[in-house]
Length: 215
Picture 1 (cartoon, rainbow, N blue to C red):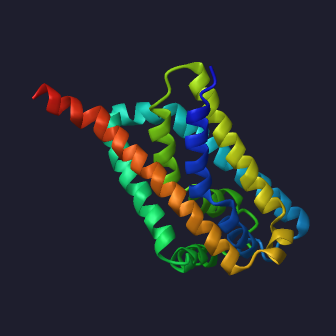
Picture 2: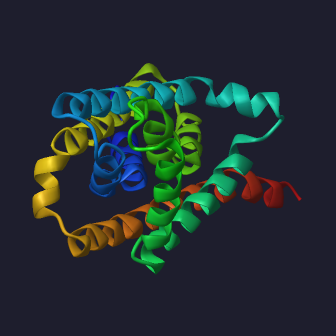
Picture 3: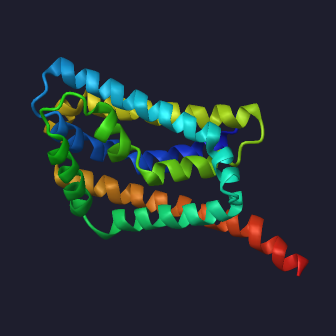
């Protein structure tokens, strides 16, 4: 059965982390010397790369944790803390520090480079560490085929929205100013903070409370 709660929780977390609104100025900056056709290709490749990378992370997340002997609950708490820090960073400033870091990567790769869709656009600018941590945490909740369907649907939905934001970035850039992007980012930061707290609480509830009860 399709788990609508899992879909909604994961969709909100991914949407806030990937932030299609903030992707617009980054995409326009990286593709400033691209033709219209090259921009469309870069948008499609970046969105597809993000989609495939997250699906792979969801599929092998548990195996990675088992390889390093990490309990899912411990990773859930650690992941929640990391995501919470990202959310607080989104709320604390106007994103200028994050933008400066991304501009530095853009300068190193060069806007004239036509192969920026996979690196650095898709990874790590769009799908950074927080995105992969969140994906692995949510994939640990999979218990049935319907759960994976919900997780995959959320990844597909966000990747589609990400592609649309970049495909129409030139048009959207004329209407979106820094204030609108900042307000949108702060709203997403609040939602992401709530998701992070839920991740931490569930990790504590699943790991530490049983240990206390056993003691």
